[in-house]
Amino acid sequence: MFGDSLSAAYGMARSSGWVALLEERLKRERPDYRVVNASVAGETSAEGRARIGQALERNHPAVVILELGANDGLRGLPLTQMKDNLAAIIERSQASGARVLLVGMKLPPNYGPDYTAEFGSSFAELARRYKAAFIPFLLEGFADKPEYFQADTIHPSAEAQPLIAARVWEALLSLLR
Image 1 (cartoon, one colour):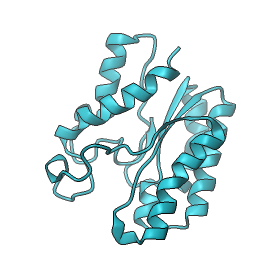
Image 2 (tube, one colour; image 1 turned 45 degrees about the horizontal axis):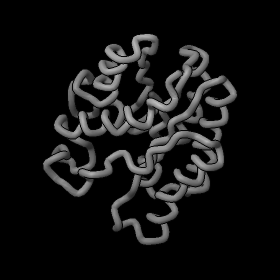
Image 3 (cartoon, one colour; image 1 turned 120 degrees about the horizontal axis):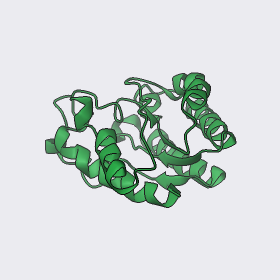
Image 4 (cartoon, helix red, strand yellow; image 1 turned 30 degrees about the vertical axis):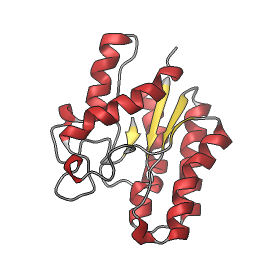
């Protein structure tokens, strides 16, 4: 797992986060896999790009779940840079022999229609280009429900974590051999 605060269980015990829930399910149903959560809260795609090589070398993953880009968008960073960084992470992961599951994100509409649309389509474009498995929007189905978010209105609450874990599990199954 290579992501940001959404994967690092920000604001809750790490054991309550969706990655830990996914790990529990893998232990039950696919014990030949283990999960390494290499997520860093606040990380941008550039920071992820800078550390992907070391993470791949240290862990030799069969699958990389890539959930980065949200912080780029929230900071209004240039989307061409985000796409280049995510592309480099995907390329390095695939070159190491890992299959990639790219997790998309969406921005709130206050970032403007052009930036918001381009941000969202960036993930689909990368998934197509690299033939990566793809989840278009990690928070699909509850993003508009305040009761599934912490007080900051950005980070999903403990109640949302099983929903996220189930969404990722469905996409991950096709990558497990």
